Amino acid sequence: MTSRASETSLRCRGKVVIVTGGTKGIGEAIVRLFVRNGASVIFCSKEEKADALEMELRELGSGTGSFIPCDVTKEDEIKRLIEETVKIHGRIDCLINNAGWHPPDQAIEDTSAQEFHDLLNLNVIGYFLTAKYALPHLRMTQGNIINISSLVGIIGQKNAIPYVATKGAVTAMTKAMAVDESQYNVRVNSISPGNIWTPLWEELASHSVNPEEMVLRGNDAQLLGRMGTAEECAKAALYLAVDGTFCTGIDLLLTGGAELNYAVKTQQKNIDHKYF
Ligand SMILES: NC(=O)c1ccc[n+]([C@@H]2O[C@H](COP(=O)([O-])OP(=O)(O)OC[C@H]3O[C@@H](n4cnc5c(N)ncnc54)[C@H](O)[C@@H]3O)[C@@H](O)[C@H]2O)c1
Image (cartoon, rainbow, N blue to C red):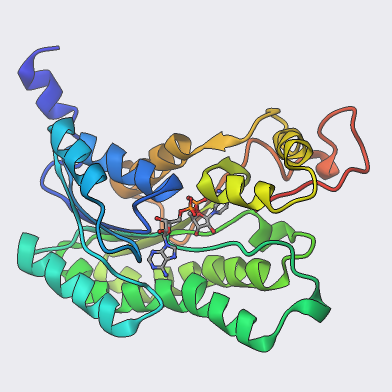
């Protein structure tokens, strides 16, 4: 490939992108793909540092990736994340709200109001506040927001009332934001992944009685017979950020067909499929 061709294939050249929860799983894959495509990415997590990932990103060449610690359950830290980004790069073109958590199985009788509040705070209010403080800048660049939601926000999931409620809220909030922001030409979309193999999935499986069995069921829950990858989520995010210029308020299902055919996927029926 000539250097000119490789330059034109940098689909995010000159764009400033914030990714929350960018140190693991889906967020990390998004950070890598956007940096590879020439973006200046700021990514955060609750941890103090992400030196090893920052160093790897430097070696990727095309764009840049800088870590800023930010716990998205804390409004003052979110404000600082946005201010620092603008101080460093002078603009924001895209916000990707991804930092979230799925608790292990929770029956209603074992779930406290405080646990529900805490999850709402992380999975919904965190997305809301990051959008709130980024929007003045996104309006200036006519940028876009991508909220990572979940298929279970639409189809439900066993023993996961708070998680399902938070993801349903993210998908609905995305549409409401898309309506309000259309006047500024800011697009707001969500991605609803089904089962994606990430450290979070692995952690959830490790809490189950039979982790291997749970992974097998996780694979069987898709028509495609496997889980998705974090890289496939990153490609969907890149599409919405760069190419999906006529998409706003959409929820992109990234599920390997998990929701189709009345949930019947393979010969194995009546099993307790696990999604998140
Ligand atoms: N993996 C799946 O199957 C799947 C399916 C549907 C939706 N999702 C959603 O995708 C998103 C990413 O999931 P994942 O599987 O990559 O998870 P993961 O646990 O592998 O990674 C989550 C990232 O979020 C960060 N994070 C967690 N709490 C934070 C906080 N308070 N402040 C800042 N950062 C924080 C973590 O440090 C990490 O970088 C989540 O919103 C999750 O609900 C995942």
